[in-house]
Every structure is written in structure tokens, then in C-alpha cells.
Length: 124
Image 1 (tube, one colour):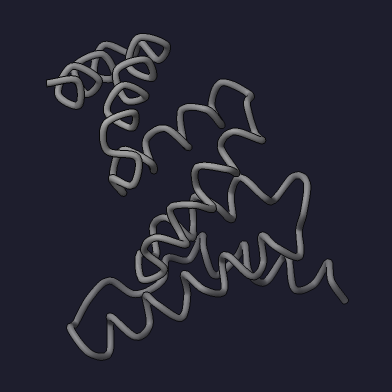
Image 2 (image 1 turned 90 degrees about the vertical axis):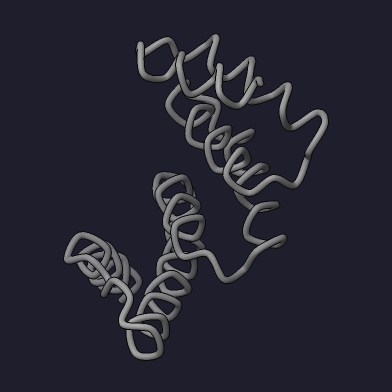
């Protein structure tokens, strides 16, 4: 029930109540991937970068095959740890390319490719 309520709150752009509901879901199902991604994104949007990193890092450890989670983690890392952001984005790129080849899935977006190129350039 809380997951659905959180989604309703998000549709009404009510971030804090949505986060409260998602956190309640995580209390009962701490490794629910979709909830973890939502909680990480909401914490990042609320300026709680460290909590977002904690949740998203756990999500990538629990399911290292989800490119969306790697992208979210990369976005979270960009401002503070560009090398780790590059690693996260590179993981997402590899997964997307593999899914594209094997299953006809979505190719990496131009925005993701650009983020990787910019971070590679910054690394020298």
C-alpha cells in the first residue's frame, strides 16, 4: 500500500510524503530495487547526497545488472567523485550494449555517452 501511496504523492509533486512512504516500504523490504532507486533519487533531489549514495550503492550491489541504477549512481557521484561516476556510467554503458546485442534492447543514450566522454576527458 505504501508503494502505491508514494507514487500518488509523486504524481502530485509532493516529494517529502512520497519519501516517507517509500522509506516505510524499505523498512519491510530493504532490498526492493525499484523502491531503492526511488529513495535514492528522492534523497538526491532533496540534497541528501550521502544517503542517496548509500542507497544506490546498495542497489547496484544487490542487482549489478540494472543499468538504470548505475546511471542514477553515476549522476549522484558526478559532483563529488568523478572517477567513480565514470565507473558507474561505464558499467551502465556495458550493460546497455550487452542488452542491445542479446535482446534488441535500448542502446545507450547520447546523454550517457556524452557524460562518459566528458568524464574521460576530465581524467586526461
